[in-house]
Amino acid sequence: MTLLHGRELYAQEIVNLLDIHQSAVSRHLKLMETSGVLNVRRDKGAKYYSINRQRIEEISARLREFV
Figure 1 (spheres, rainbow, N blue to C red):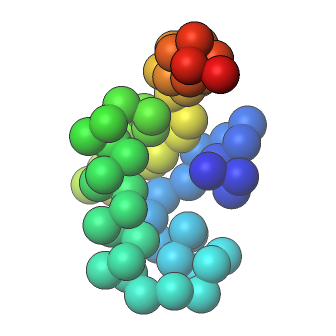
Figure 2: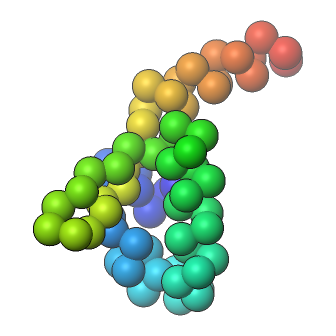
């Protein structure tokens, strides 16, 4: 998530920056996309990921209720 702070990246950029397997990055991106914490924009066949700040704020507010 830190990599996406204030910008969007596509999967291969994340793979290159983290130096981990494409399959691991894809799996985690899919989980975060499904949970709504990432926005996805498609452009020319590539998926660009960014943080869904609204969803993060919603989750944070719910967590604060339990603390």
